[in-house]
Image 1: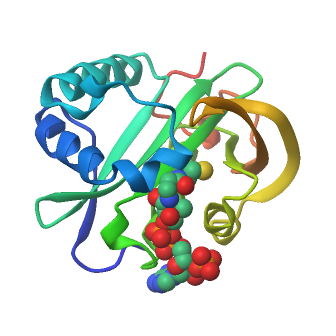
Image 2: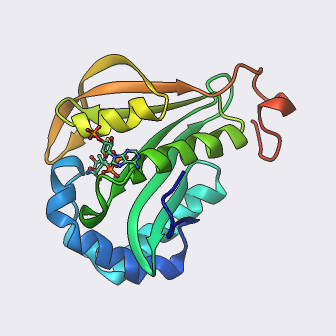
Image 3: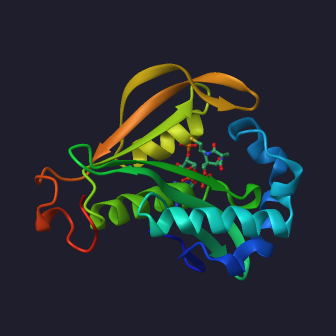
Length: 189
Ligand SMILES: CC(C)(COP(=O)(O)OP(=O)(O)OC[C@H]1O[C@@H](n2cnc3c(N)ncnc32)[C@H](O)[C@@H]1OP(=O)(O)O)[C@@H](O)C(=O)NCCC(=O)NCCS
């Protein structure tokens, strides 16, 4: 559960200005864990483009991004991404917390929220990968009920190089794909 005062809301185009400010003030904090961002990404215009892309992905059922708000400022983000249906019914989860809001259980609460949302969408499984030395993020995933299941060599292009990742998953239910009990408010194809 989120601590008092924090609220998670779906990402909207109106959030471009606040999101540009949040990414700008968290540049150093996020740089070791993120892809290398072009300068435009940190501008309001760049954010409008990024949010428009994410909205199109949401409309296509591929991505479900949320922002964490604290009194009008962005305190973090969590997104269900790479949704695959059919017999996989799986997605990835990614997240970050503003450098001034760390150590309050926010990431853990956001990942738990993502699991509830993914279950509502009828997904069978959520997956996450962390850099090998991102022990803080690994603690978040374990607290949110994920199990470590492997090591993927040269898995993601982070900080300008292909880096190994520890892989985690959480199984959400064992209903057959498309069964209404697996989540009945979305396209299951
Ligand atoms: C990794 C990251 C998301 C963690 O965010 P966070 O909000 O500080 O995480 P949490 O508060 O949920 O957990 C962090 C610590 O706070 C502690 N904590 C403090 N109060 C807590 C509370 N009320 N409830 C739960 N945990 C609490 C946890 O025990 C945990 O301790 P640990 O690191 O010794 O395991 C954040 O450091 C970040 O944004 N890093 C950069 C981006 C990144 O790494 N993203 C993930 C990529 S895989």
